[in-house]
Structures are given as structure tokens and as C-alpha cells.
Length: 624
Image (tube, one colour):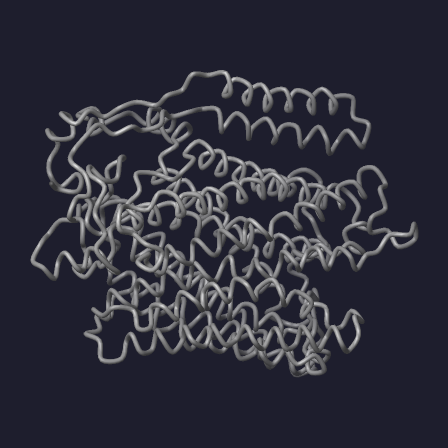
């Protein structure tokens, strides 16, 4: 495949990424798009903290503050954290199980473009009359009363984006079940693959309730359906049930892949097999199962009654047990290991106390009478940021440094990476630790400003300074990426020297067909086993033969673009805009036309012939 190595122009590269169905390039698309949304969410957070730095501030108006608050939460959860984790799932999981791609490459591409256009649609609300302003949970009593189209952008944007995420989850499930290399039993799968598997199952079951609730909200706002309108016989509390039946498993959809990334890092840089692998697997599955049984702990103050509150309190405390198992397993993995404090390992070690702090405050909130006091105070803000930032964002930063060489073939600077870590770590604790005390002192959530003389001045100023520290850390990471890309110093297949799993056995970045020959997996930490026997390559499970690969396709982009266009028509049709109905119909025609074209197209993919594979350098795949 000599043409693969040829330099191509910018336009050719853009077209390549617009039409790709290769899981590794889709991973890069998720990384770029998720990274952009992460920066947008970060700017919104900085504006929130700037407003709350001093009492009686008027940096932003009360209405804009509500929009910033809503868009920060919505962006960070739906458009930054999840897509960035999907980037690592796409880039690494197929390599870890010895697959040549995901089960449905076309659907994988469609999932990305639906996410992207849904996120773009949501963020265009800033320029088209105002962003959503009812909080990221968009409780029905607030969202039905919200004027303008902000909530409609929220509903339609998340619906489009959610379809993409659901497709991704189903795709990963089928891939892991059906496409593992010979010998890769379930109990030989790396922990990151296991957490991807369980998180994908959670996506499969958690997103339909969100889809249903947003569907009902859309019909309430556009057609007066009155699902949630109490005055017309609806029930506003039903929204909370639907949202949190999705919303609490969503926390585990985010944190489980983060656990997987940290498990790989602890094992790699302690030069030890993960302690208690089997118990880690069962703890992962148990967290996924219990994650669906705790949603009403978000509703202790709603008035469900003491029996319901008690049941959900017990379930919430129970879910701390498998999480605690993981913490001790990570500590025992480090114990006695030959530890190498790389940037990923620094994040991993810092994650343990940070996440435990978030877990402890979670157990505090599981006590329903105590939650009556904490609820809707800044104590809650501190709690979930310790979980999401101290868990998920730390994992994303660690994973970026850890997997960058496998995705791009270059190493991020360790020196700049340690600078990033120090500023982000200090800034994180400065920002959120003090918020526990602000909450206990009575500062409510979602307030635009506060009065002087209430004892809240110093805490809020410290919190805002901490946010600036985190911003410096993120900027230094961007500088690191630019410098690394400009230097373009190539690295080998195992740049950390202690890689244990299959992805470290193939070149960096991986060839587009991943494995020249599917590997034979002979145990847990398959590549480590081969290295311990003095081999530098994997044992092949097949002779070199022709490889079948899917063709690129522009259709996923077109299908997603059609829904994006149709959403504008649907939203403005309610306002009786003359152009709205043709736009709605035109968008749907584009989408369904592209789907019909796809169904009629005779697309059999292409073959890479074994002669071409044998001509390639041996380091391009698994050597025979």
C-alpha cells in the first residue's frame, strides 16, 4: 500500500476524514471535536467563576448566567467528557481485542457525525436568540416556562447527538462480543475493554429513557402535548424520573472507562499485573448493575416518602462497595511495584485521593435526612466535580498522554506534561475543595451573585483563582500538543517500554488494517507474556492472507447533515415561518435519500492482497 505513505494536500486530508470509516481516524475526530467542546465548556466555567469571584458582581447578567450554567453542564457531560472517552474507546479497544475494526464501521462514522451535528446545533443557540437556560437537567417546570428557542435547541440537539452515542454503544457491544482475537476469552480482556463493554451496555439501556423524555418535552413545547404541564393534568416529577433513570447511569458511563484507563496505567507503570483482576471485572459489572438502582437519590427532597428514600439510600451506599474494591486493588497493584512516575502515572496516583473524596461526600448524601441539608447547595457542586473532574477529567488527561503515541506516533513532552499536571491538580483542589464549606455555610447552587458579609467572599475568590490555575494547565497542554506536532519525532510500537496489552505490539500509529495477522492470545496481558519469553512480536493465529476492509463513505456525513437542517425547520415551523416547512422537508429528504442510496449501493469494500502485506516493512503489523 505505497499510496498510504504518500503526502497528500490539505483538501485531500479533509475529504479523507469526512468520509472515513476507520475506527482510528474516527477516534481522532472524536478527540478534536470533544476537545473543542471541552474548551468551550471551560470558557463558560471561567465566566461563571469570574462572575462569582466577588460579591454583588455584574460581570454577566442574571439571564446570561443561567445560560452559561446550563450550557457548561450540558456541554461538559454530553459534548466533551463522553466524546473524549469515545475517542479512546474507538482508538484502543479494537486493538486491545485483536480486531481489524469495529463490527459496523459505517455506523461508527454515522455515530460520530450525528454527535457532531447535534452538538453544533445546540451551540448555535448562542447566536440565534439565546442558549437554553433551565439548567443541564432541564427540569420540566423550568423548561416549559422558558421563552425563546433555547430549550428547543437543547431538546433537538441532544436528540440528534444521543442517537449517535447510542449507535456507538451498540457497535462496541457487538465488536467485543463477536470480534475478539483467537484465545481472547472474556477473562483475558484488558480492564479498559471490560469497562468499555459495561459502559456500552449502560448506554444501550440508559439512553432510551432520555430519548423518550426529550421527545415528550419537545411535543410539550411545540404542540402542547402536556406530558409535564401540571395545569393541564401532566406531571412535572415524571421528567425527573426519566432524566435521572438516564442521568445516574450516565455518571457510570463516564467513570467506568476512566477506571479502565487508570487500570491500564497503574499496571503498566508499576510493572505488575493488575492486582485482583477477577474481582475488578466483577466490581465493574456490579457497578453497572447497581447504577440503575440509585436514580431517586437525586430526588430525596421531592417527597417520594420515607420507604422510597430508604430503599434508594441503601442502594446508593451499596454501590460504594464495588468502587472501594477497585480502590484497594489499584493500591495493591502499586504496592511493591517498580513504579515509574510518568505524567500518566502522576494523574493516576492523584486520582485516588481525589476520587475517594468525591465518593465519601457521595455516601454522605446517601443519608436522606442529611441530603435535605446538602441538597441544592454548593456542597453538591463540590461533590460531583470531585467525581467528574477528579475522576473523568483526570483520566482524560492521563489517557491523552498515555495513548497519544499509539494514536499519532509521537510522544507529548513529559516536562510540559508535568507542568500541566501541577497547575491542573492544584487548581482543581483550590476550586472545588472550598466549595464543600461554601455549601455547608448556606450558599445555594445556581445563584447569579451573593451579598457581602455572609462569610462567602474568601471561599468564592479562592475557588475562582483555582479555576484560573486549571485554565493555565489546559493551555499548557495545548502548547504541548502544538510543539509535539511540529517536532514530529516518531516513536516505536512500545514507547513506554512496559506495554502489556495487544495495542503496544503493533506500530505507532497503527496501520489502517491494525493486524497483518490476527494474534493468538495466550493469556491475560498477552503482549507481556510474549515479551517475557524473549519475543518482540505476537504469536500469529493465522498465516498471512488477503484482508478485507470497508470502503470510505460520505453517506454518514450527509445523513447527519440532513437531520441538522431538518431540526431548524421543525423548530421554526412552530413560529409559522414561511421557510421552515420547506427546510424541514428538505432536510428529511436529504437524510432519507442518503439512507436509500446507501441501501441500494453495492458496497463490498476492498481487499489488501497478501503480496502487498508481505512487501510492507515488518513493523507495520504482527510479524509472522
